[in-house]
Image (cartoon, rainbow over all chains, first blue to last red):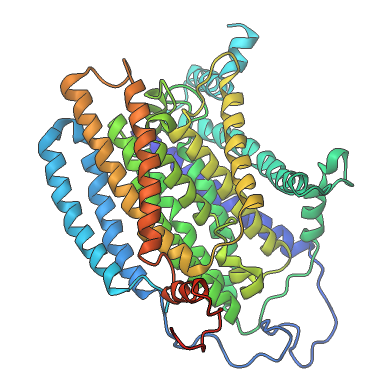
Length: 122
Length: 410
């Protein structure tokens, strides 16, 4: 049992090492320009060729906020669904009805959000 | 054991012999795990990297073939060395990073994409039994769901760290799209978990006397479409829509850091193809041929299906993508769960499991899937599938008023 997670830990190390090695190798062998860049144009952020205006780290209207809220609700729902699915054979009909009620409560929320037009692009 | 028997289940046999050899040396059990893990990881990497290179070649070649053009055909036979040549070229390219960006986050992001994709291979079984996967966790599916969602953070790190407006917008879209499609994907797998009654990958493959795509057609479709969106592949690649966002979250990336992103995306594609293979297409199982050959063949079949969709369909608009997930896939996934649960009840009460006589259920499930998709698409469009204004414009157009929005409403 614990050995299973030993393998995961080994893969964790390998999965960190491989991309790190690739990136480090690139850092060593990649071409390095010696040309001066007086106006800091080359290393400024790309904005269709014109001079960059301001930073993008600003406050702006985040349209996906309601999706994020709905996601939290439904992701937590799936956390409840997985153990239910594994033990469904023992729970039988009782489990079926119980999960039906649980999902219905959430679906009411989804339908409400749908009818309110939250999930529409305006 | 003959040579053929050894080859048939290569991954498991190599590991079994290696473990036996190590135990024969009288090593501590933790050291055996360590050395066995090294061999397992080496074998997995030996599978992953060549396959990814072939994937990159295949994508360009196959789409070229569909679009009646040759595709890359200069480097090596059939252009097979093209990905290698590209990799070498990109390795020597200068790495430019924006001075205003967050340097550390820009470095970590591509590595994290790579990392999260590679971690998923731990639980994918390539052979029979508990040694088939590197680590046959008893929570295999849950592990995949958990680690698989790490990639979102990497994309947002790349977008935010660049301090570029296109990159930030691309990253926002990426986060919204990826979290939206995660829910239907996760719900689609629950149908399979209900039938199997376990989260262990080896058991999921073991129980598949027939591929679960037959019993779970709707689940397969939902998972597959969700996976296409998770991978930002056409037709659901709004995240990196060139015509709107340059290339989305990796606008500021160049040289090998870009290539690491690219490689990570392809490893992700490979791992999703292996998950679809394992969960819905009965994994390594198959007659006559070696199990790993069956596995690779199914993985390539899934990948070719993705390419086919990319070459056939046009890109979907961003509001349509979000609506498709929340108003189409999630309700259908929820219905699918309860249909499957009802069938499991029937199997347990009146039959001795589905294995003995699955055909009526296969027929019913395919029929239900077809009817549900047809009915729900009607409802979906009736309730204004995407943007409401689009429906209004369409109504105007159908009434002969043209598409000019300032024209008077009849």
